[in-house]
Length: 112
Length: 113
Image (cartoon, rainbow over all chains, first blue to last red; front, side, top):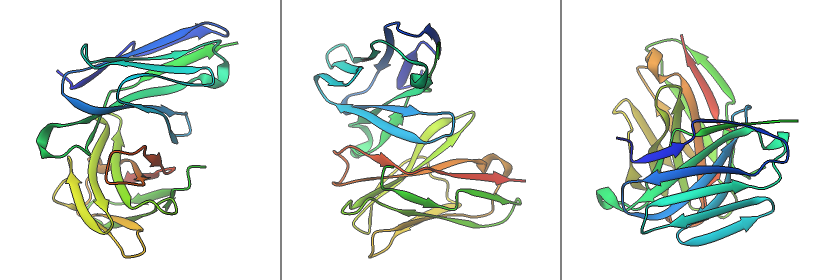
């Protein structure tokens, strides 16, 4: 079982829909990152959080440390939101708390 | 633009060869991280340097090595290349030793023929 599991793997939405991507992890963590990767390949860091909730524009990220679960929400989705969204955790295992472990990503397609 | 630069953008080489990938962190960032993204394995952490010293090691093969220079740029050396080393290699940087947000470079796409 992977340390970081994302769901769904693929998501297709119509423009304007509210979108939720989920991330569950099995190890103790010091932080969780949400990343966005566009078809060209570049990776952008969206959020880094260790508790509670963060909001940036139409994006909201929440984390529940007790349940080892995080969600990324996109309100009023737009075709330009089409990308792969990747969850990554900074684990406390292995004597180093700097290592990031990644989920396999969620491919989001927003149709006009 | 994240402020992290990587060269080259694309690299095509043959099995058995050696290549060097270069990364310049954002101004002021002391940590550099290397990641590999392949179709079958996804994104994997390779290694981290902080202010010239190795800080953390991930799934880095013995054929791979890295270093961070006094001007804080970093190089990832890949030797005895195999077909399976074909991947996107990302560099990221952060201000601190690992607790800060990371900023990713555009990546180097390596193709081994």
